[in-house]
Length: 426
Image (tube, rainbow, N blue to C red; front, side):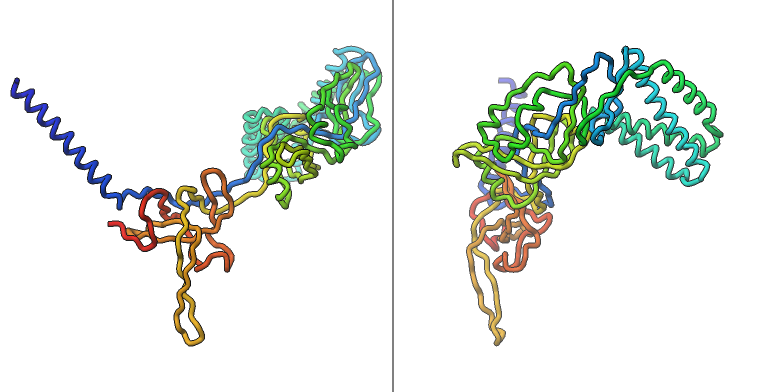
């Protein structure tokens, strides 16, 4: 055999033997093989996930005309009984002219407002620049969240703030020419687009022109009697072609959903309000409270109904979809369940003669590594899920046997054999 090849084989073999020997030493020296994790402050909201269905007091607005509608109010606007929700035009061209004139009217009012504010000197450049920055950020957020209403509103506010800056810095002395031009255009549009009628509502409430066919699927007045079978049998109907929109005429509305037996139990024992998020419509958490729970079989699924009284233009069009039901929010030190053990802790008390007395009690806790010493600390659990617990770093007096518990950034041992309080790791 070639000497050079023999040397290479020998070196490789010795290297492998050395690695095996080192691995053996590490494995056999189990005293320093204790993985740890830091106890860190964490906030968790306990959630239930379900498919929700919204039930409102909805009344259809009929359109008995043959003309084209131009809506006088936006989705989510609050209207009074007898209030106008749309104008009727003989053709689409007239309706479009009215829509354009309404849009230009808003621009006109914004320009006049900016010009008047600048004359009074009621706002400074730093405030204007801050408004520009905020409106730009909020408009971009609206784009990212696909919120067309927010994009429109904040883009209008952004334009107003920019116009304010133009006047304040002297780049424009006034907007008189533009104001005059807008007034003339609006007058011309309105002269050629006279309406032939109006659509009004008999009921006060929130307006939307969107109807989905579920408006009459369940009687709002029967919500107190709704059962799980009723919920499962809700059917979608047809939207009449003469529909001009609808009014949500009661400020209270409901979210119904089917939940598991475990989730039903959690809801029954939960003493407090909840929050509901419709993630497909908005990231906003809606305040609600548990209205009723119908569980025909104690070991089966249940119907949970939540009552809400908050409404906006996003929510008024939501009917069904995934929801997140938030129960409680807990803050504490996050610790892996694998780290929890039962062991004894000692408490020292003194009598009236200053004599020490030791008491020992078996409690639930974790092993914490302080330098090379292992210490056992009792824990007070605030919240528990499948893999972790949140522990109270400052429990009320009397909860802990000896008053000692884990602290922020403690190195908690999550795995290891032969652990005990006072053990020294070499």
